[in-house]
Image 1 (tube, helix red, strand yellow):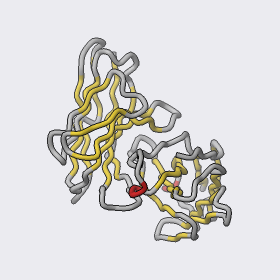
Image 2 (image 1 turned 45 degrees about the vertical axis):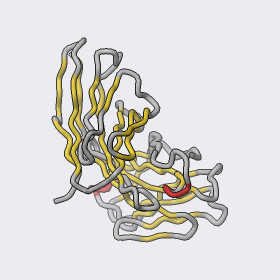
Image 3 (image 1 turned 180 degrees about the horizontal axis):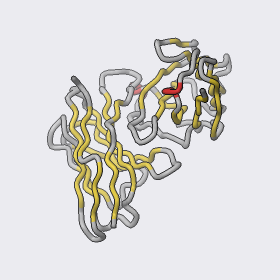
Image 4 (image 1 turned 180 degrees about the vertical axis):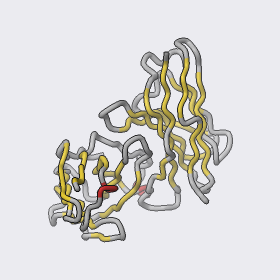
Length: 114
Length: 115
């Protein structure tokens, strides 16, 4: 079935370590996004990519990095520079040809820094 | 993109209609109204969107006022599985130029469907 797969679902990391969250989609979508969600809060945009080999910072990009080497993949690295990385991370994609750009979300990755 | 205002929480009895309001008084003429919902610890799910006319699909109906300053999402027969946070978002159409790939999610409305 077509969809977005995020892995791992749960991840623990020690302070000072970088960690990479995987996001893969087989929907043939051009645009992909990473959001962060803290308890009781809405979603905040970290990075987004409209096309392969191109990406833009969202509202809270500091301490994060991304790459978009393939259309179907948009990994997010949470670096040691991110001061409060414990959160729920959501990846999404959308089709560039659609006028209204409905977002399709993965099931999320929950990162806990020990 | 225009801001939206939603109640923090609402309750609804199972089997009754759930009416979730959203204010978007600064909406522009080329901005769509979107609704998503998020069941606890899952990714948000698209429900419906509209521009001016009322819309209906298998999940819900969207009623947009004539001045487009507010809208209501209607779940006609709420079930326990409809308990979720519902997000109302406004955004320009993707072919309008600018940063039109972004959707900004606020805190939404926590709808609790009670047995």
